[in-house]
Image (tube, rainbow, N blue to C red; front, side, top):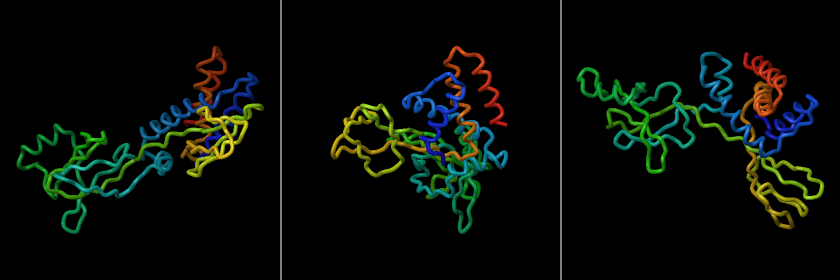
Length: 249
């Protein structure tokens, strides 16, 4: 796991070593890191488990053997669900049977054919449809099936750096990722505008990045690249493009 405050400070160091004197506000950083975080995820998912690196990098997002109760063959997938990995399973007697994930069109065609219609030994499922809260569902056939087990990738935690600022010195203090209430001292103002004082506390919204140290260089180059694209400086953009290419090799 990477502390998001460390990533922010390292980003400022990267920009300062270029001697441009540029800085990025925490609020701007929060917008950029959200995009970079998702971009890295999509790059790893594209080659997911085609090699050891992508498998290891996304290991922290894997959820194995998650049990879902079915009602008339339908269950709501967990709110953290992003996509299936592998095949779902149902219990047939005392053994698990893999469930074929098919399209709605293919499933309809198989249901109509006596030779290919879903059975307890040759089940199928489709992913799609939502419950009343908008959560995506899984539909397992035959609909008499009562339970299904899945492996899936969960959604990424959205990174965020929370802070308060001293009203006089303008020094920014970063809040850690914690559920413990954080005090905002007198003479300081919280990010949202709450004025500090005796007994004034807030719940930290900081969320650290779940990536490992091996991904740090790639994260920084992607951040600098996005900043460079907003500047009228072709040399900086070319340099960051080359560094990003090296990090992705």
